[in-house]
Image 1: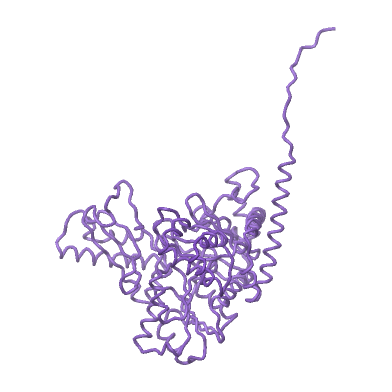
Image 2: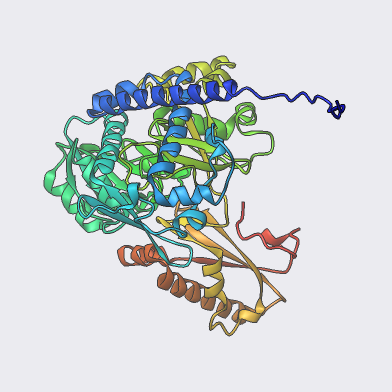
Length: 526
């Protein structure tokens, strides 16, 4: 019998599928538990008192469930949303067991790449019960955001719950001074406030607001909702007309852009209380909001170097806005560039926003972590007890530095460097005298916040030439912004002073251009 050839025996290690199955089962279980907690929270939030109950009982242990819930929302959208399914198929990554395994989305990669219907659940845009909000893009291109009736009702409940907690009013009367029309903030705020108050949607019309206050008299508790600069205009106008502030109770809620503590102090010389909120048309107008605790913390960060270093880091000079937010409504993360990544987790969202990078730079901190840092000092601890005594919200904190790109937000409009560049150079007979430019928002001695366009000159100019250059640049930028940004154009219609753009000239290598490398320009003054 022929001898069979010898074949070596090769031992192969077969990886057991059990760990993967266990991990998957754990994620499914956590996601289900997270959905259950989120559903209970939504049920409780149907009444402002229930919203307050939930906001006061958030525990850090729930953050893990919120993350699992957000991951489950992404997994469900991968099955139900055609655009998101195509987005993921173009970015293969194996089994996505964790939330971070799902890639970030943004306007360029997701919104522009897929039409509105494809971004809806099951690829269908309903024919009724939908409200479309609008925001302007970098080149004036409008971005539309359809929202279902149930989705809007959930937003309304959140806004109403927060307002009832932070602005306790016996006879509430809301004067809604946000821009009206296709913009999300004005119309949504008016509908939300109608759940808890008498509402008049005046828009940013000073005359109508003053007439309303006088006609309905001092027996109401008034809440004015508006952009921060408009609140200053209102205070100054009422002062000029001798308005009897002492007879009235008027508070203010604002959003759309940041607000300095100097402006808050100025406003609170007349207004009983001034609080700000954070949102985005891309996502929701009710992502985060200020409380007495967050305002105290922000003011403490201004003067307390030790707390500032512990919370923000050694080299951070900027003072962020500080908000509290509900991770079961909007789950927030930050990426390696500290950009805010948001997942709107509500089951009623018509167009799911999934790990969406809105372009804001931020820091996320748990409530417990802040309390630990604060309580290390006995003076801080005593102040903290007073700061949290009224609202007692234990929700995590969002510390917002603003746009991570070169954009500045002004009166609800985003001002982009490329638009400013067009205004500086197109049709400008003095354009050759400009070397570089950069942008800033500056609050002057009168507490007016205005955009400032800093120009670096190529050579020294005589005074008449300098004046002519400033005039041409101011008019050119205003003209171009008006033509490409609907938000900016609307601001001019509602308030002529919105077009007061400042232009400052600098000799070569001076001012904000000192020490800058010329290979790549920096368009935003930090």
